[in-house]
Length: 166
Picture (cartoon, rainbow, N blue to C red):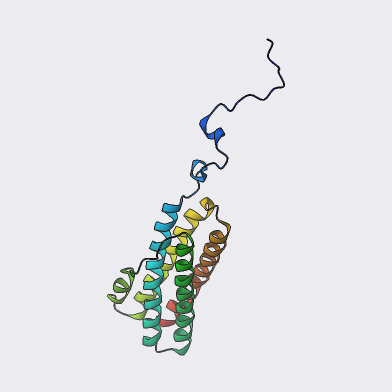
C-alpha cells in the first residue's frame, strides 16, 4: 500500500505527546522555584518593614519620617501580597523574618542605615527582574511587576533621604 503524503504523521518526540507541556521545558519558573522565591522575598519584606518603621521613629526630620513610613506601608502591603500568592499556590507562607533588620540596625547613623536599606531594596529589584520573564502565571506576574515598580521608586526615595540626612 502506498503512503498518503497528506496524512498526518505521529509526533516525533515525547514532548509532542503531551496536551499541556511542562512550562519549565521552555525556561519558565516551576512551582517549587516560585514558592522558594516568594518565601525568600516575604522574609526580606518583613525585615524591610521592621527596618523602615524603626528608622522612621528615629528620624529627626518630619519629611524623612513620613517618607520612611510610606516605604513601610509598601513593605507591609507586599508581605500581604506574597502571603496570598504563596497560599494560592497551595502552601503556607514562612513565618520567618530575614536577618536584614539586624544587619541594618548594627550600623551607626541614619545615613549608613538608609544606604543599606537602599541596597536591600535593590536586591529585591534584582531578584524580581531575574524571574519575571520566566513567570507564566498572569496574576503573579502582575503582582511582582507592581512590587518591582514600587521598589524602584522606593530606591529613589531612599537615595533622596540619604542625601537629606548627611
